[in-house]
Each structure stands twice: as C-alpha cells, then as structure tokens.
Image (cartoon, rainbow, N blue to C red; front, side):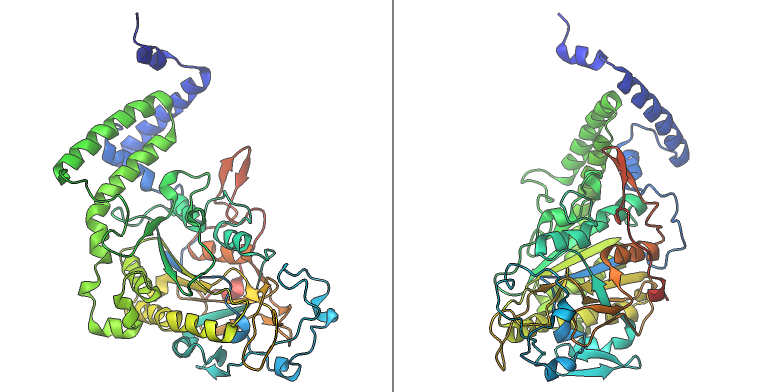
Length: 486
C-alpha cells in the first residue's frame, strides 16, 4: 500500500500545473538576477522583503514616515483653530443655518440645545508663518515654521472605530490592509534586520478608547507586511528570544531545516504565503540582535533626554516612543506608527486636554527638532493628528470653567513636517464658528494619496487584486493636494 503523503504529492490538477509552471519560470528568472539558488532560505527571505515596485513611480521626497496618531479626536478648537467669534456667542444655540441638518452622535442628539462653547485657553501667533497655536502647546509653537498645519481635514465617519479604521486603511470597514502594510507591499524593506512597519503604543488618560491590532494589520496582503508591535519592558517583541536551552547555533540550524521543509511544500502547493513565512522566520532571527540594540536608549546623551523630556527615560511613554521612533528612522524603518490614546474629551475637557498636551507636546516637537538636527527631517515625513475633531458646542452642561465636546467629522486639524511637505503654512479654513470648511477641504483619501505621492507612489497604481477586483489604499477616490508639497 502506498504512503498517503506520497499520493497527495503526486496529485496535480490543472491549476496547480500552471501555477507551478509560472512559479518555476519566475523563480529561475529571479535566481539569475540575484545570483542565488531557488532553494536557499536566505534568497527566499530576501525576495519576499522586496516590494512589488522595481522603482518608485515618482522621485520620492520622503524615504520613511513617522505617524503620531492621537487616538480619540483632539479638539482643534483648543489647539489650532482659533475662533474668537465663539466668545461673542457663548452659550447661544448652534444655528440651524450652520448645522444644516448634519447628523449628530447618539450622545448629543437628545440634547434640547447645543450651546456654543469657546475655548478657555488663549491663542497667539508664532514664528514667521504667524500660525495660530494655543498656549497648551508651548513646544509645538516653537517649531511653527517647520509645520504644515491643515485645518480643513474632513471625514464621513462619526464614531471612533470606523473613523480610525478609515484613516489607517482607507475603509471604514475592517479587513483592509493598513497604510504601513501597503507601503511594505509596494516599497519593501530598507533595512533587512528590522521590520518594514513598526508600531508603538502609549496611553494618556486612564480609560481611553481601545486600539485594535487590525489597525496595523496586513488585510488581504501577505502576513509579512503587517506591523510589528513593540512593547515596553524587557521583551520589546514577544516570542523573539530563544527558549531556555536553545542557543543561536541551534536556532540557525532549526530555521535552515524548517526553511527546507517549507520550500518543499512551496514547490508542491505554489502558495506564496509559504515564502512569506520563511521571510518572517528569517526576520525574527535577525531581530534577536537588532531589536535589543535599537530599543536600548543607554547610548543617548543627556541633552537628548532634556530635549524629549524626563518621561523619555520611562519605556512605554509617549516621549520614550518618540525617541524610539527617531532611532528606528535612523535605521531606515519604512513606516513607524505611534498611537497615543486618551483624546476623547466628552466632558471635563479643559482639564483632560491639558494633561494630554503635557504628555505629548514636548516630545512631538522634540522629534521634529531632533530629526532636523540630524539631517533626517528632509526625507522623513512626520504626521500628527487624530481620526476626527470636536464640536463647537458643549456636550452636556456649559459652565465658566468646564464643558465637553462631541465627535465632529466635518472639520478638524492635523499637521505634517519634513519629507517634502511645504513648511510654515496653514492650509484650509473653517467658518467663524468652526463648524464647516470654507476653504480647501482635504478628505481622508486626499491625505492618503498625498502621503503616497511623497514616497514616490502614484496612489492609483499601487493595487492588489482580491476577490475579483483591484483594491488600493485610496479605494476609488483621492487626489494629491499639491499645494502642500514643497
């Protein structure tokens, strides 16, 4: 009686035949180009780390992205969008001529009135650009001339989960690849010893909106392209260290034999996920050395810690993550995503947003300054912003010193710096009450198209065929906002 495994190996239908034929031709061509044998685990890993684009569509202005995502929706009215007219109409109901029937969340739809609420924090103009910035951001104010402040962002999503998912993946529904995964797929790795896409998390207030791992997921792309989350503490990446009793030589031997078995399986099945798996194993092996080195801040100077703030000495804080982001950028990690939770101020906004700014202001500005001092800002795009803004009216009672703000997708503010972005400008405008956009609207898909453009990618040409159609980060929308480009 024949071995069942032998029988399975002998089976070949029409689809397997043609897939194996094409893979064989492609593999031979690849081997001739890179001078490696197709059975080499290192060559398979190296090929998988390369992006699908042999070269960028355009001359890139940015090599890498650091995205400082402020989860929860920072209030633009407290930080960047100065509206003195709100003071004159404090407590008055939001006019229907301004709202125009736009939907509200379930948290304020029941209110009998929507009292207009001016910020209690003063604004001033800063730098040669004369940008209006709140006193809550004294450090950000010092780098005003490096910033491109976009006050006319808008989105259709009005609740956190779809709004965050929209910014990260281009769709309000989960399941699509994240922006970092798309860049990994398109451009590949610039450092074979570290992941192409790294994720760092920090928390502000005690009970912030949760963050889900699917926000840095690969969706329908190969698993190799998903973000790798770094943790605070002694083991920055889980399951990276060797088990007790297994030395590096044993690990290397095990990976070599495992890669050989996977290659046999690949030649039988033609499943590209197998080569992606080989590449992930190889990356994990190299990360055993590279991750401890990049996360060890002991070689940073005292002046660097003074720049980022004392909190940078504590792993897992926003300040420490900003410093780590700079170290990853120095090592050419392609996409570095920071999430800082706690910007959801439905009540007690004046006190809580001040605490959030205390956590983030100095380190955000320090990151831009540090990159600039090291000559990295020119080709590093830094982005700061959340998933939507906050309403100009108070959620709940309005008092002299206390109020809250609900979600507001119609207009909000982000800023960008470096990486081909025009510095020292404020782009877009909102009406005198800060409810609707009056100049130069920028949609989520426009923002994504512009980011890809800066990295040398035409957003309409980076696609992946899945379930019978071609998908892209910007779906079927988006245009590059050329006025933001340097």
